[in-house]
Image (cartoon, rainbow, N blue to C red; front, side, top):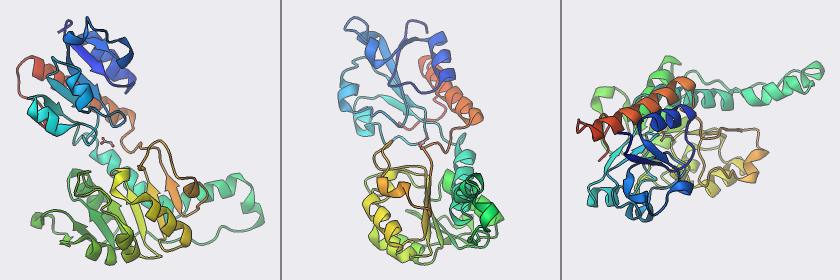
Amino acid sequence: MESIGVLMTCPIYGYLEEELAKRFRLFNPSNISEENVNSIRAVVCNTKISVDSVLIDSLPKLEIVSTFSVGYDKIDIAKCREKNIRVTNTPDVLSEDVADTAIGLALAVLRKICVSDQYVRNGHWIKSDFPLTTKFSGKAVGIVGLGRIGSAIAKRAAAFGCPISYYSRSEKTESGYKYYPNILDLASNSEVLFVACTLTKETYHIVNRQVIDALGPKGVIINIGRGQHIDQPELVSALSEGRLGGAGLDVFENEPEVPEQLLGLENVVLSPHAASDTVETCNAMADLVLSNLEAHFLNKPLLTPVV
Ligand SMILES: O=CC(=O)O
């Protein structure tokens, strides 16, 4: 396979890059030339750089796009289908870490873990006790999207004694959780709302002002999906004005930019789109990318095909 060209759209993960370089001719956007563009048969990407129609059309021999992520919203899937280009992602291996992060963010927001850490470090504890915080156990949890990650969040929240409800395109009766066919009803009946659905045209800004108002001043939003799931200016004003109780955010509309107003808010916990970034999970994701590429070039079935 050493003669097969693979383009990595940006630096992704050291181990993945080393293993790709052992197996393929590895390119990055700055070292592709007119002579070698025809050797590129695969693109490896992540959630940072789009694999759009311009990039796809510039690689005439492209056969497969393999993303180091479960989400594939940065890939022009319609274009890939049209050109018969296969697409793979990295589901399952990251669900536990993302769900752990979601619960961690909920605890951090409600129990003010980051603020209390600063309180101790800055010497305030010597002068007075830290103010009371809010309990997570037993809170009514709403989950937007009961897929692999949403289900892993539900399982964890259930262990905290939280009643679980969810909104998704279709009811999943086997889950045993309460289904709301409408996100507004879910938000009205939830105290902590976890956003865990796939980003599509239908779920863009699925959390809008009405949903935020339905959660109300004691409600908390946790987003481990995509920044574009939430109308960010509405979220920022609701948090600043006290119309929403708090938020734990791993993702933002225009990463890595984070709205200035959020930086000063104690009811917000911020994380740099890192929910699946553990060594164990990144190694498993890298192995899945490699196995999908190898399967494709050996004419074997793909392990985790999207297209
Ligand atoms: O955001 C991360 C992913 O899609 O894996």
